[in-house]
Image (cartoon, one colour):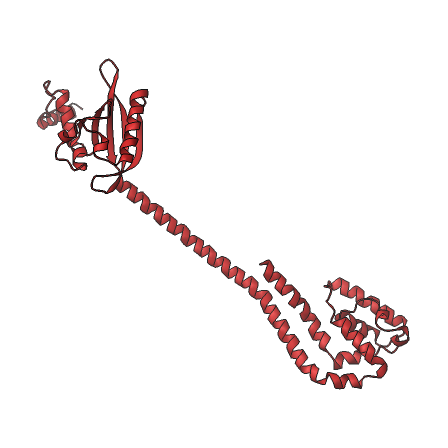
Length: 317
């Protein structure tokens, strides 16, 4: 421990650290500060006239020496807007004794360039405490502001990029949702078109081949089958089919099960008496042949809901 202490003492002696001379007064220290500091330091009287300024401050205004600033104001070096703001701020400090700390402002220099500064101003007091002016320190923060602007720009670009990515996903999703009903519409239209192309040429001959007493019934049946369909659940279809089957069976109509299924598929879900008179119900068996020879309703009816619901879904999207 003793050896280490002696070694440290020896090292300190070899450094020859000078002591401050008693003759080094406040003026010498202040002048050294005003010359060496990179910040703009200035003292002003109660009328906001410069009393003393740092070398950096003078050079930033295009002057050769701080002495050229003495007795002048910000109105001699800055725009009216900036000078007026600084004057009112300093008069408020002198009147109230309240300092301003770290205030950031954009200023226009004599050469027309803009820069950003951070300013702190406090009251300048005499020995008796009376306010005789202000002392201020202004630091150039232009580079920091530029860096912050670049960061904000990068953040905005990132946000925009994310927005575009989300928009792309949204568009893809909407396109998929629209394509689904439109695809269904296209398939339904194609189905109807091909079916009609196959049966329309033979329709007149088929109609003439029907017994005369069934021709009016056939037209009623076709009219009923092309009426706007009422969407039915599987349970509802089964209920209607069983009801028709029971009604036909009660009238002793052959093939009641097959005929009931055909009628429900064609959208005829009420009582069969609405279409066929009681006298013709027993002779309704030929309808099974109509389904074989004239299958238009079997093809067209399943496609009708698609044509109705497809546009509705697209509109909702």
